[in-house]
Image: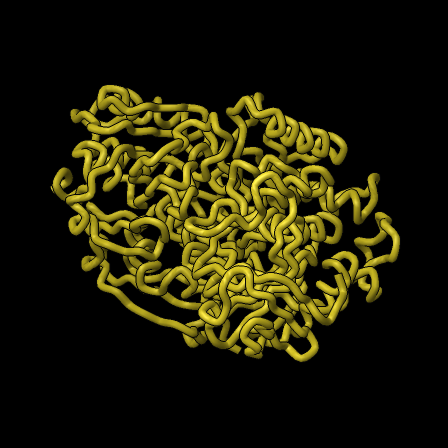
Length: 433
Length: 198
């Protein structure tokens, strides 16, 4: 029976020769990830249901990455990290990345990849909706709640409904001013915020093959904003090079069968996609950047699992080099590895950090989720009033970055940087031509 | 929370009510398994919604609205289980919506906090906030007791007994999927394929 990549991974994980969309299967879990916002609740349920002395099903398969509320004075946030630390100690977990130590990483979805936990053909569940990011590595990866996560901690299994697959194909090559963020915002605008609900979203075509891993991650990261259960991309030499550099574990990638069935199929000429923006307050409120040229902004933000990777900062630097920002522009790297990269990566002889500082940006090198989801009142870059912010993050729901009065426009790092320079929404082609 | 009928006041919302509106991220420092923090989460339920009367009155921890009627894609966004828990902790018992975001629906079932009921047609215009309504789970209907209109709901199917039991673990125990008392050997019990995801 012909299968998609998602079907093949779930068939293998459930010990079946084949699975069909709509079928419920018990999948064996390769990796369970949790963080400081959902980990304490997950641990609480695990202990309540399995007993205070219970051990996790496989300590090598549990990954705990505190990342949300780290650089804050809030006592409960510190208490929550202490709960994770205590649990990691009790369970002797090898993959705990503690705050305040050299092991601290920052944003879980990026750290998972950088630390070798994203491996082709495997099953990853995480207590965070952007767990789907790992689909870039040919992994079945999706978000779950605390209760399901606690069930996995005790049993190593989860009941999953096999999703039907939507296939998005991009022929040719994306233009140089376009980023994966533009592509996914374009797609979400097309299918709507619930167009992918219960479905796998598969990306293919020459233009996707040409994308580097961080850009593929951006694409898969935001499938949840289209309602998608998981995003997935076929593994290739670029995938294998990234993964092999970061783990010695063996893995087996899956490729789609040529005659696999899809519930949605569409091809694009990659050259036709334009710099794209999502207007407040929904990721599917699509507009081209150039159509919003009369929208004045009061701040810009570059960060998060979606738009805080090294590629994102290097792209912003191309626009910001030798220019000044017109509005307050907050930059925060997703992980400590990226924070180091900002200080060492150069563009025409200057480090990214010096380019940003000379442009007048407000840079924090404390890697975390920061203001992408608002967070405690003292969070770096948080919106605390009626700001109009253009951001590389993933959601522009009311109050998402803090105050309900805020308005958030989502865009690529190129578009955010160009807009920061002009003080209004700006098509980056004005700077990248 | 096993019961056939759910009766109470209705709170009406629109489409795409996301989890940031249901429980804003600044309150995610609260841990739902700590009883006083569970109660606190309830007091903040739906406080991020724009242009609506408060779901939980100022200075209170419980809502007067047992039933939420909404449009499409209720609960979109984050996987935070705090979202159905906040509504449940406030005293909400059911949501009646045209459709749900997948993770929110699953979290409702897994926690047993809320009945996420689907409708084939849009019911948002059939109610105003404050109407008295009654849901009949066996008959899969909701009745607006002010207008007398009776409207069909999609049956909850295999999700209902899980919510009736009070969530995934209690259901698993009652049906023999896992041991009846907390014990490390629980992981050896291979769960039977009964619970239906999403």
